Length: 225
Image (cartoon, rainbow, N blue to C red; front, side):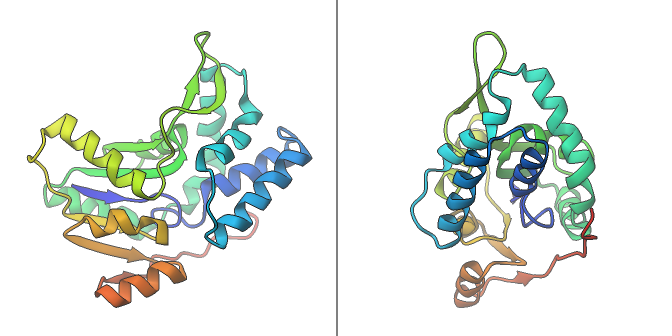
């Protein structure tokens, strides 16, 4: 298995942050909700304990009660317009290299599933585990996360569950893992070959202390992109 984080690793920047910006611009979320999300972001930056499911529910308040097909189309178009150009060429190259070596390449991400599913159509990974929002019986989205968000320890837990279900327990190995954030440390620590990609300060310090390779995949994206 070769596992890649999405935001800040496979792409430049954060797709949830860009999504929030669009939802604010389009007035799909209220000013109060945007303030709550902003305060959550500040607390997250300072590594204070946060409710990952709560903030995703706040973002998805923009789509509460809307049909799945409608919301998924919106998120796919959002990817095409704002995120596709941010996909890092070095991520593509690394994914393809692992495919050529015979690895199963999977993206494990905290961002919303329709965004990652759209990216999977154009890039060399064949599976994904990402944050899925709960559907109501009538096929509309709620503001609740189905299960748990793919963040921190949950990434490696979800990966193990997925791999055990597909290949059988003991029949797979996490050969490579790529991440950019200190919250990716549990996932990277479980890999035979961990890589810190354009890491934040917390992960950079940890990677240096443990002798992990540090890769710079940063790209320049036009400010109006």
